[in-house]
Image (cartoon, rainbow, N blue to C red; front, side, top):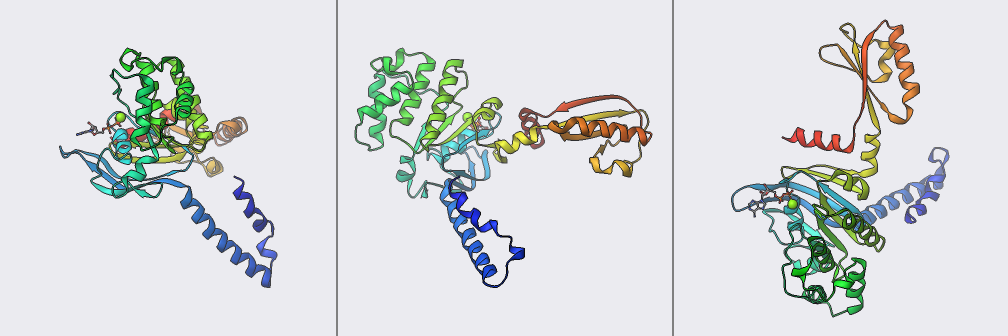
Length: 350
Ligand SMILES: Nc1ncnc2c1ncn2[C@@H]1O[C@H](COP(=O)(O)OP(=O)(O)O)[C@@H](O)[C@H]1O
Ligand SMILES: [Mg+2]
């Protein structure tokens, strides 16, 4: 944000009123500025996935030509129905599944030729609970850190366990813990080596409300420290609550990547459907500026509008219809939610 303010002095002068050296300087500066921001943009990318496909041994193609950049420090939510390929995508980035084609870099390191460096940046909280051990919470989490070649740091492990309300359980054997506690242990393990990127694969599937709240708070705290977070979920409200950007995956294809705010702006759209008394051949010219859509059978007019400006627009439209002699016998309004958008996107893919 702060960096952006450096460019404002360039835009203050109106180029239309500039001449000679002033204009040359402006053009040169603007070109330099563009080059600078391109480099800046590249620096911002922490995970780069290009043309990634994955076919499993069975021949099944779980990922099809996925291209995606994850920005440093963002919370990215990957949405998709069961079997869409979310876990496959995450597992591939984490180096657990080998891509069939395509390339992935993490922090600039290729996940195949430079897997150790790539892996060191990543913490993964897997979808499946895999923690039926006799070991204590403390030992398991400390061991995870050691796996990454990091020197012991009891103060860090203590901080992680406390942030996950696991401190009291540090001496308990994992197998004696409840499901929710086991999931907390998985998160502690993923955070043990201070990763710069955290993957959470369906972190809140089947967890209680308390753990979900804790998880969200933790994710926000981590983001404050600059950690990049990628979470998969099929709970729309989770993405709505947490994410900076949203990606939708269906049948192995990434069908949408969008800023959440932008999606919410689209969400603010409402539709008014007017059921007409008589079949309408075409929309009268006087009503052209409303962007109305006439149904194929000519019996329904659909007006899509910004929810915030509804009154002025609708009243004027109804007046306009009256003046044009178009009568309707019924009307109803609807508002698209993120869920609607998601469901219709995924349906289109079927
Ligand atoms: N090891 C595997 N061998 C064959 N098919 C697999 C394997 N793992 C996953 N799949 C298939 O790939 C598809 C995507 O699975 P997955 O990535 O787990 O989806 P999601 O996490 O979105 O539910 C599914 O159809 C699944 O059955
Ligand atoms: Mg999965």
